Length: 89
Length: 225
Image (tube, one colour):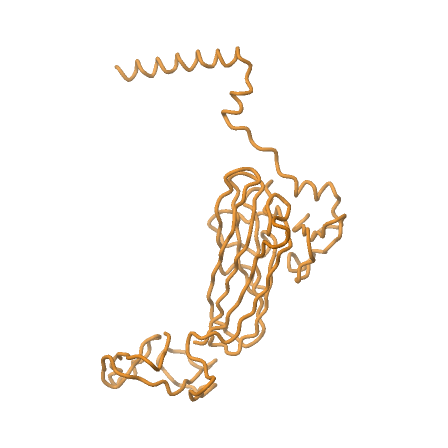
């Protein structure tokens, strides 16, 4: 398990400050405090790589084909009409 | 209470009943108002007193005031460490109503101080630059002392408004009685709130920013009481 990844100078405190069994490793260009053995580059990348951004509703609608957008607009128009009718009653 | 020799002070009547037991109050035999005062010294009990106002033990220090003798509130010593190196962690500090533990998040700064008096205050300040890698993520920072598992103080910074947005900076301040003249170490830990997110110290999105001149600091000032 990776606890911390350091990109620059080595910190002034020991790895055991992170966890009693933590060890500091150099993996490629970074230092890593980890427990359970030397982490792989893939494990480090998994910690560092940001998750893909979650699409917004606008993004989802923009990606729809035109026919789907037309159908969605029709459904929305009906729903709006129903809501108006209820409001009048 | 900041004591000064160049102003006036009022007092509370002690009343002869031994009831001079409130901190930050000047007592006299009978109350006086706006009188000139002079600080002549102080007594210190690092241990031995159990009840406020019951002076049943010999002071551990008797000090007459003179040149070089600090007044209450003055800084006795200051320790400071700075760090401009970037680091990242994905170990979560839960964003809930529990005290952060020293097994949560990752430690990023550490600083020791040896107080000169157990009665003095330690004023701890941390200013950190933190960046998240996901929208809505928080910069969470907690302060720990020595091996105590529970945080003394914790704070969260601004929420990241966009992916790879900046969450910090975070400013944390805490004041505590020294309690001992042995060396004591204060540590900060940081972490994201979400299981798959990463929080970066001195940078954002798992990379440093500003080429090393973005600096975080941890500072401890020992204040005379």
